[in-house]
Image (cartoon, one colour):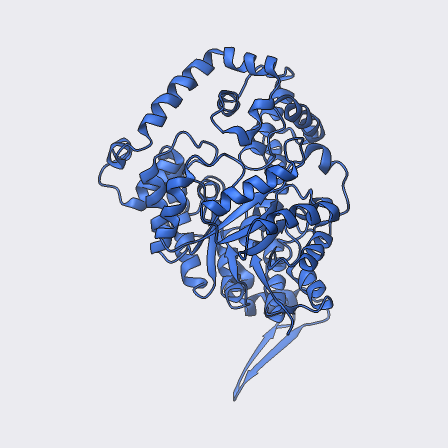
Length: 503
């Protein structure tokens, strides 16, 4: 009997983040989610992490809690997951409150939108996993730990073996090899997957890669041959580009190798067709297969970060300096100990590089996060121990460094402070939803703007979904040779004529 492969859909989360700078409107998700839910995926990776809450409020001007309810309602059959870390600010694992993290997670669970949590296990240290993972287990959540692949002198075979054992000791239900930069090739997936599997026992294994270098499809095929159980894929146009491989191509390759694919591919083709139509309506780009890119191995910027960085540089009128920023990224990485280019470090590096280029003077302004990095607040996994000592001394000599060190000490003391103390900042009578929005956004201004934008309806709906008949009529109206359309149902007939031909 052929082995049945599992598929994890990333369309609404990593597909959107990679190809559309996390700009997939909620109405677009709503239009296709029921079909995705019924297509046979083992899990859906959903945009429910705190970082996406910020994006939804700040840029889309939509309500993320309404999005959470929509996912629960429209996708009841499939296990829904997201990436969570033990902090409500994914760029700051020091400034957080444990009770707030637990409240946020519990709300997602209670609303029916979360059954699985993915943890990037070897990125920001594991000093909080002793309470975070047991809490997730108590909530009944599947815990999928990611062994994050990277290329640097410290990412050795022994390193990957040690980190896999650490994640297993904390209670991983699933282990997956995560390649945020699309850096895996055939030789290295054989090497690292084999190490991960050897130290994972009988746990399910998955692979998550990006098409950034054009090798992800071949890497997935090799992973199939090695015995991998699950594959993270997306539906075009949210596949390929810098996102995950297309579900259609991965499924075709799996069948050719004799594996069983229990997906409703016809349903997913219908979803893809809808997504292309809505992308055109929203003026969002579409992508095809990516060509092999040597430069990716030089700068190692993940696809989602490249997408966001380009978007932000365009807003700053610096889109013509993208290549300069990328060159500066390479220099900053080399000087700061080769931090793993994955959230949050990739955002730190790209932000600092953009500031250096924009100001024309390197490190004239140093972002707070890099000062925290130099202080060692992001653990040994960050690479700060390999940082250029002169640069680290410079960062720590800045007046801001003393302020951040003192603030960090206070924050560490406040991690277990009662949540009621934080509620006083925003209003003690707020609902949990409203409080957490203000806690995550650190204020109310952007939330008020979002509320004003959503006062009539929670999000924009797309015409190709709201009224396919109107879309058909609109398309027919564009055909110069068609002057009349007749629709008949039973004994009733409707005749539509172009105005110039009407009687």
